[in-house]
Image 1 (tube, rainbow, N blue to C red):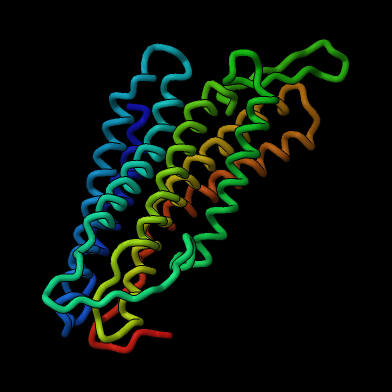
Image 2: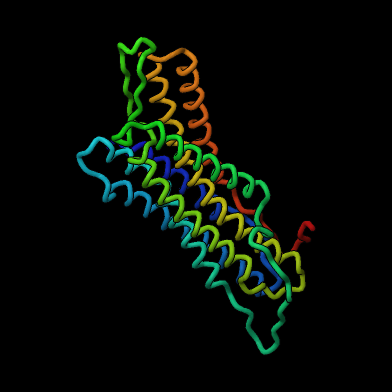
Length: 293
């Protein structure tokens, strides 16, 4: 029952994303190839959200790490956003692998060299880089500062008479599973972006429509991966701030308590930002309108 608020957040984010997909209105395409590609992309995006949300809920409820130990609940909570991101990215990659192929007696192919991030939105690429750096710093510092149990932090007073301990703290008890999940998510994201960059082009008289469809695919991949990683990392920062403030309030200097409060605020802001990223719609391209250059 303690995981219920987090699970409700996952369900809410998935419902908002599904609603955005279902209620979006775009003019019908005059070209059958573009219409088929847009329909395939829409159904893939919808399937990815539904399957990922179901997998995240199942991971939170039936995680192999759950049990009677004091760290089991925290690990299960970490697995919810990580599982969502991994499954969401995997489903999108499968959708890109099954992208509609050119058909008919006459086919055209354009020799265009595409890089891994050429179609990706710049702001999502920059946010992904910042999230990777933030996750690495959080995991390394958490492992160094945590106690031997890997889930708490301790501080001794200046006179050595008092020792304060607080938990949870992102040591390797929590950081280990988080690191494995984030590494898997990173590898899947790179693979999915590679598939987006190299998949067959949509045969259309408007080259910009094909490019826009590819940009939308890259957006969906990065949206789910970055949002999930940001929620995971921010959760670790948030609990680190709570424990730091708690232990500093007992035996530590006031500056350390302020630092804990700042970390808590950054973690909370990151959680909200991650949820917002998960709900940002991919750019739409009405096929009967001109596509921005």
